[in-house]
Length: 306
Image (cartoon, rainbow, N blue to C red; front, side):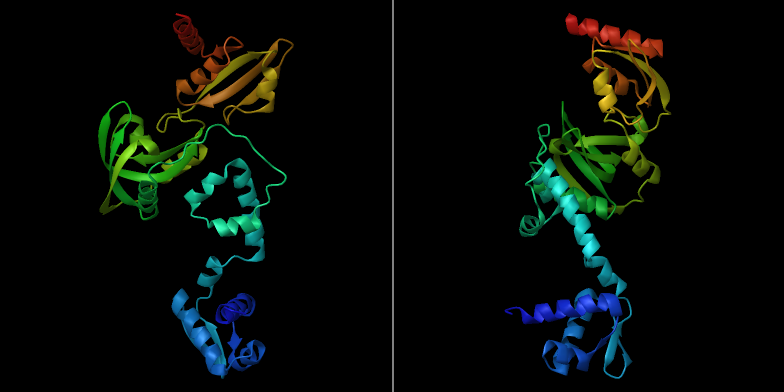
C-alpha cells in the first residue's frame, strides 16, 4: 500500500478504540514493521491528538485521555447516521453541504440519490461566504460583533451577541441579541443583507432562554419576549385537507371536525403569525377568537381589494 504508515496508524487507532492498550512487539509482528517504528507511530498519535502516552507494562502503552480521540473518530454507527443525514440533505438540496464544510469527495462515496428527489422552494445561497465563515467563528467563540446591515436603509448595529445561524423559509438568518428594549433585543438579520461584520475581542455568555426560543419558534414573526395566547380558527371544507395533511404552525391542533369544516387551535405570541397565515387562505378561513384579529384580517382583505 502506498500510504502504509497512514494505514498502520489507522489500524492502531481502530484497535485502541476497543482495547485502549498497544504492545509494541505484537504490533510490530502484526504490521510487519520494527518495534521502534510502532513506537514512532504511538508518538505521532500522541503529538497529533495532544494526549499523553504512558507505559502500562514493559513494551505496552496506553493513552491517558483516549476519549478525546474517540470523540473525533467516527465509529460504524456514527458513519451510518452521517450517511442517512447526507442522503436526506442531498435530496433536499445538496448545496447546503458547503455551509457544513463537508468534503465533496466524501459525499460522492456515501450519497445514494437513486431513490429520492425533493423539489423545494427557491433556495437562497449566501453570496458572501467569507462573511458567513466569520459569523460562524463569532458564534463558536461567543465573540461580540458590530454589523453594517442594509434592508430598507443602511444601519449599523453594535455590540451584538450572535447566538445561531438559522435557515428558515428558504433564507439564512443570523439570530442576535443586544440591549435594545424592542423584542428583548432579539433580531433576525438576513445574512445576505449584512454588508460587513467586525469581530470584537469582548466575549459574552450565551442566553439559554434565547437558545430555547430559537429551537421552538414557529415562524419568523414569533416574538421573543411576549407570552403566548390562544387563537381559534375555522377553515372550510374546500381547504381543510391541507390543514389535515400539514401543520402550518407547530402549535396547530384540531379542536373539532364538523360537516362545514375544521376548527383549529393555535398558540402564538405575535398576531402577525396568524394574520399572515390566514391571509394566504382567504376567503376559506375565519378567525373565531380573539374577534379583533378577524377584524384586522377583514381590513387586510379590503386593502388588497382596493
